[in-house]
Image (tube, helix red, strand yellow):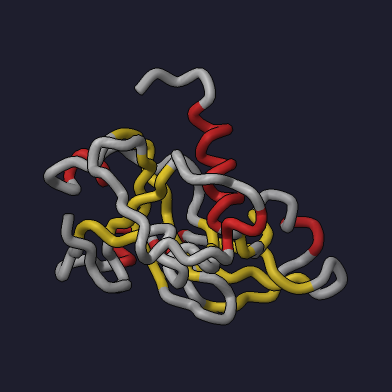
Length: 166
């Protein structure tokens, strides 16, 4: 199987069969073979941010690696976009499809992606890549900007699919 370089808009695999201890986040998986018939979740890289965690979206499609990304992308999103670190650097998650025509505004609704940052006394919203001041009163409906490790994301995915049949 051919894997691609880290590029915005590319689809990546999230192996759901790897160990999930905290120390597994820093282990290199560069030499591990990922069979296409194993069980995977899939995501897309929306934005690269080495300091604040790469912004990704996770799709509903769970299963073997398909021959086309269309079934993955058309399956809808499992959760709101989130920030991740270490998944790509250690080759735990690998890119399987590229999309040279990807547009984060059109394809990922980027202008609507919102995160809460700052302190309760001085909250800020990150909306579509821009920071906007806000008040404490309207903060409860927004997701806090947190950076997740690969095993944390995999745990969230496994919890989300509990009871679903794939």
